[in-house]
Length: 168
Image (cartoon, rainbow, N blue to C red):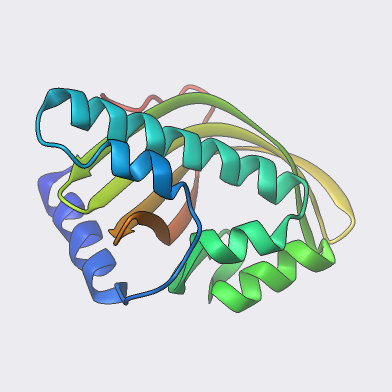
């Protein structure tokens, strides 16, 4: 990822940041608040788990858990458009997009202060407007630590070839 694109993502996430109350893995976040490499590794593992949980919650249409994870100002970019938290939750709840299964092939995580960026290379099996589809994506997720919790600030689906690789 270019340095400029990385800065744009961080700047955009910072603009979307607001205070909030959530229940997203607070005990684990407390364990990773110390300084040093062990804290970084622990924080990265927490972020990987949150991202993995999110795919399960989307597949199972667990909108209450997703509502707690998504920041109120979160943005979602799909192949068909961009929208905010409430619309994403409604889409999941009604099944107009049903994220049946996300097979994760590769994950890269970068953490800078209270921001975490996750890149997942996935095959998404979904039902979109009553049609079954299977699509290769690289999904970019931006999380922000807010107090003891992590909130998703942005999620972007980028359509890619199955040979696409994420540089670590």
